[in-house]
Image (cartoon, rainbow, N blue to C red; front, side, top):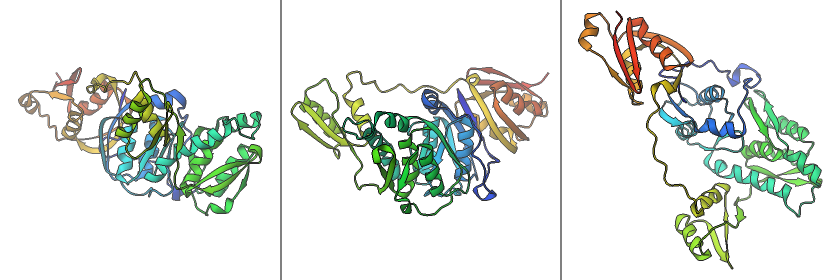
Length: 380
């Protein structure tokens, strides 16, 4: 399904950080497979004169996907953006690049932050999780299960990260050592719909370049600066000879620490590096996907709000997503129809028929949809 969001002048009514404390939007956020499926769905839209955080909040609520904006990214910068038929992930990445940020997707949340933090966050979560399940861990099995159990985690506008951290620690029955490393700040409200202790703590602490270690048999944590190098050592699987696998890795990822040890290849890298290597060495490596054509008009939905926009401009915007309009200009002129007439429009998840009716009915025009072609005529 393709969603057109915020076409032209997206006039959002989203709570501001400065307007006083508020609960995060009461949204039934998607998790697990449904979360990732939604991120793959296409979106299109044009946003002008909208603050960055408001735009992310709008997308988050509309698509039921949790999005967390790192405190170090300016939330007030206004981001002009035009996206046509891109996946939601690609759309958020495009938005992030406008403010020199990048995107990482831990479980059930989209994290938008500084490039260095984005490259570390999933690996830090994996490291802390691996410490829980390692055979050598001193943490009892029951306690490991409790720390890996998922819970919703939320905070409201104008809460301090220290208070948030303490509440998360209380939620997972943890004592904190090193709280003084977290400076005072005020954060915007956010909700993580389903997170383990390692995920929730890592996403909060990375915003201060911090991580943690488990202490006291899993009953506590100690806050620590993130080390200079954040990597995981793994032994990738492969079907070819070890020397051939190592050569393939070194050619594709020349900066990675990869070496041969007997019949095994040892690689140190981030989670994203290891995922890319697994794909590279997979015997069933998928072929380069064939680009899909634009979705038929009747498969799209439209959510938008604008005021005093010419109908011709609406048509032009649709034409950018491969829609073709066919009409007799002389017949329209004879009927007194002016495509430069302005209209106001507000729709929520409207079908193509509902959208086109709202656009062309004020001009007393009829329409017929044939795949990506719209035939227009004066109403009889």
